[in-house]
Image 1 (cartoon, rainbow, N blue to C red):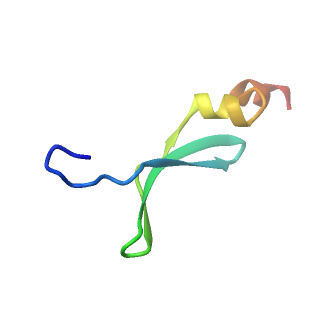
Image 2 (cartoon, helix red, strand yellow; image 1 turned 45 degrees about the vertical axis):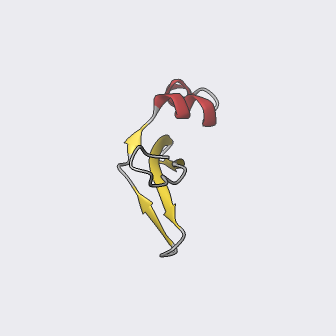
Length: 62
């Protein structure tokens, strides 16, 4: 809960694979309006290593 007393919804990260690399975008779900708000998309080496069996290192082997 925020100091002002308002509730902040749980933040989540959407992981997207585009052209053999992984990007992450934080998002929140507004249940009242039934919409998903996507934030800034950014490349993630950490998630690439986790989800692509070696990440960017694997690209030079193909």
